[in-house]
Length: 179
Length: 317
Image 1 (cartoon, chains in turn cyan, brown):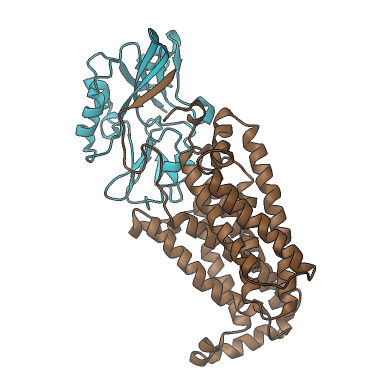
Image 2 (cartoon, chains in turn orange, blue; image 1 turned 60 degrees about the vertical axis):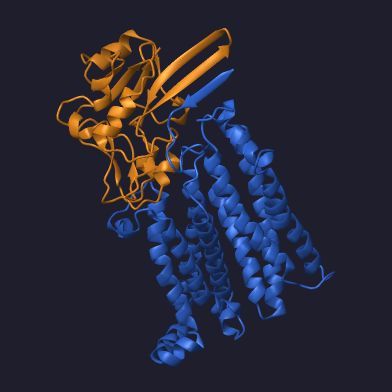
C-alpha cells in the first residue's frame, strides 16, 4: 500500500505562486477560492529577521478529523495512496469538515459541496505528479510514496531537518517542510 | 515579532472562519429544548401524573413535534448541498456525531408520536377519531406508559448531549475541544425546557416543581461552565487563548452579561425567592432562562469558529 506525501523545501521556495496558479488551472478551482496558497512566516526583529516561505494546502492527514466527523462518508481516504478525498455526490454541505480542519484547507465550492486539494488525484493515481510539483521553478516541491524507503520523499526526510504544520493537533499531516 | 501573511482568502474561511450563521445556534437551542421537554414529559408520565387531566405532559409531545420541525428547517437551511441531505440515511458513520444526530432525530419523531397518542390533542382527534381507541388501549396498560416514558427520556438524553458533543469533536476549533460541552448543552436544554414548561403549566403544583428543577439545572450549568474553563485553561496555549475569548476577549461582554448573568444567575436568584414564597411565580425568570439558553448557543458557535490553533501567538492563521 502506497502512502502519498509531499516534501517541500522551504530553503528553495521563493513564494512565486506558480503552484497556486497551476493548481487553479489544473483543477478548475472557481474564482475567489484557492486549494493551495503561500504563507510568509517572519520571525525576529529588523535587521535580524528569519523568513520561511511555505506553499500550503490540505495536509492529507493520516488521522484526518475531516474524515472522522463527516456524517455521510463523503470525506474518505483513497485506496491508492491514502489521499483524503471528497465524494461530491455524498457531500451534503454541512461544513463539519471545515470546522474540524486545523489548517482551514477546505471551502464550500459554489456548487455546494466541500472542496480542497486532492493531491491532483486524477494525475497521481496514474503515477504522475501533482500539477504544483511539476510547475515549481525551483523544484522545491517533491511528491511520492512515504512507505517506500527508496522514494525521493523518504530519502529527503531521512537526510534533512523538517517540520509539519500544527503537529499538536494530533492529525499526523503528510506534508513535510524542510528547513 | 512573529508575523504570518497568507495569500489565501476563501469565502467563509478567511479572515476568520464563519461557516455557521444563525441556523446552527438556533437548531442547537431547539434540539436542547426538545431534549429537555422529552425528559420532563417522560418524568411526569413515570410519576403517574398521566392520571391528572391538567398535566402539562400531554401538551408537550405536540409542541415538541412542531418546535423540533422548525429546528430541522433551520438545519436544512444551513446545508450547502441541500438536496443531497438524504445521504445521511444511506450510511451510519460511528465517529461522526452528526451521523448519530441524524439517526437520533429519526427515532425522536416516532417516540414523540407514541407519547402524543397517550392523549391525542382534540383537533387531531376530531379529524381521526380512530386514534381515540388506540389511545384507550395504550392507556389500559401501565407498562406501555412506562415504556413510552423511558423511551422519551433516553432519546431526550441522547439528543441533548449530542448537540454539545457535535461541537467538541471538531478538532480545528480549540474552544470546542472539551468533553463537558455535551453535558453543558444537555443541562442548558433541561433548564430551558423547565422554563418553557413552567410558562405553559396550568397548576401551581407543576410550576413549583419546575421552578425547583430549573434551579437545580441552572446550578448544574454553572458548575459545568466552571469545569469547562478549568479544562481549557489547564490545556495547551491554544486552548487557553480560546477560553480567553469568552473570559476577557471579544465575546466576554455578551457571555458574562447575557449568558451567565441574565441567563443563569439572576433567574436562579428570582426563582429561589419564588420557591420560598417571598415573591410570586412569574414568566420573567423563565424568559430570562430561555434568552440565556439561545445566547449560550450563539456565543459558543460564534466564538468557537473564531478560535483556531494558532490563536495563542496572536497569529492570524
